[in-house]
Image 1 (cartoon, protein in one colour):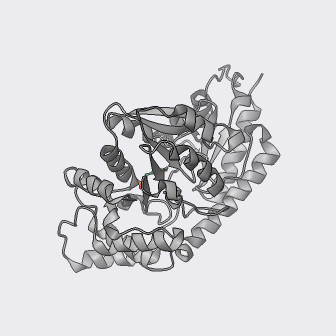
Image 2: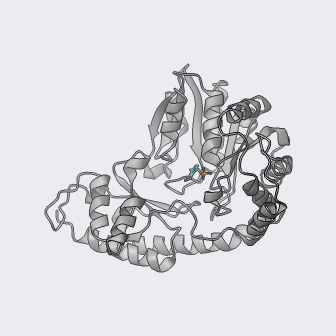
Length: 382
Ligand code: PMP
């Protein structure tokens, strides 16, 4: 879609893009300075495979301060983005043919990563009524002797909803009966949160010894292009992930590691506060707008991340002014693009009845995009 939008722009067509999966903010100043200083040092040796020790220490200290979780630096493995951390976790954890449970809607890369690890994704659909969150009964019913892991993403891409500690407790009670099932906890949006308590499944005693935390610097630190993420896991798994990474990409970019270290050394929450404030204002503005103009899309207030997942069921089966019947989210997204607003089809996340809007976009663009969306949907005929 991003490529299509670029082509349309090049052809002189105005398109408002609500596609972005990355903050529209610069890398915070102290991180920029640390990166420049790292370059000026003039040395560029291979970094240690699992990352530089001060950064591993800083990450362990951060999880201790923010979540009360005790980890040794040796349990932290730094990667080239959290996507690689998730892949390292899967390759270290699953055997060919095993099953990995993925609640839908899910982040696009989970299924291919599971398949590359020669395991089988087991997709569990969720609904708007539960905030697109997995229920304990659903989890219980899906677990088989082949189940090896459950992937949780909270706050979620694409919905922005987040599990409460109580909800995670209830899932942990199910997992307590199945000690061989691990949790891969994608916490990349944990700092981008507007409501509720930041809580990791690793905080539950039943899950601490079998949770792999995956996190990174692409979202809260606005540095996706510098490619830096990490996992935190029980020692044996951290060592396995280090071996995998040692024979694939080896250690992550040293400049990015030094920048991230500067970010974690300061007051992290204060550093990201201005960006979170802007996201919150946009989130609230979109909610108010949708409630007034598009209540059929079942608007809700996401607790975190920077996405809205809109239910477009009410518009399926309708006809565009040019006579095309819209039978899926993909059709609707195509039509919206023709009308000048680009959004992501829910099919990328496992739903044919939703579209995803990103609000990592300036407020005037969001407002213009929402108006185009309303006009385009209003022009559809029954
Ligand atoms: N998990 C989720 C839920 C994401 O949205 C993303 C980025 N879109 C990632 C992981 C990967 O991020 P990165 O590899 O840039 O750290």
